[in-house]
Length: 287
Image (cartoon, rainbow, N blue to C red; front, top):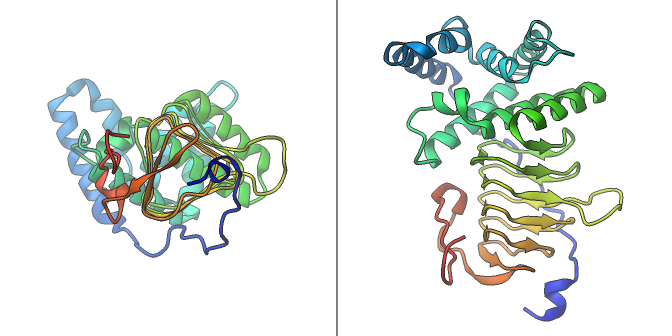
């Protein structure tokens, strides 16, 4: 790659975005699993019995459980739980596709994170999942024209989870947001399905320009901790971005980039790095 290629911004392609394409999760089966796990938690750890009863065992659906869990975490003096929970649950019940999207995220975190031994863990404890689910509600509110309420949820989610996702951003399903602290997503960013992202990643702009100014992340991408991807650049399908990298240019599909500024260092050894979660660079070291 020439010096000019490393420094000059490029324009992302106009490929059709794959956002929550197909893949309907059996949410009823998942819900039964969550209920069974909740019973075990209440038995094995009585100090958490009230939590699992409130969030899971006293509820009749995943939609109601999501509303209850987020309300416990997001309620504030200016919007107490008695107001927050009906708002959130109402969005989940009315827009069942959001529940399916969250179920796919839940499954992605359970399947890809070796530290996760039960699908109940992300729902109860993983702020990456909870922040992403809050975004999904705020995004729906944004689409419904309830801009101020969407921005309010963005604000309280940022306080609660240290994750800042603009409600206008477009994010697909099957997303693993691992650890999540300091994850930032700008207004016009697009993240396709089945992407894995570690903590302290920024999908940002490069200045005060208007319009489409944030990155496009294609499906199957793995982004290492601390990476900064800036401007309307495209990270191609199945690519890897090394930890701490600063990406200012398009990344071709199935390649690995690293460095400041990021340059191509190899070809991805996996067809789908996001699923495999192999954080080794394909030339040397790890991401």
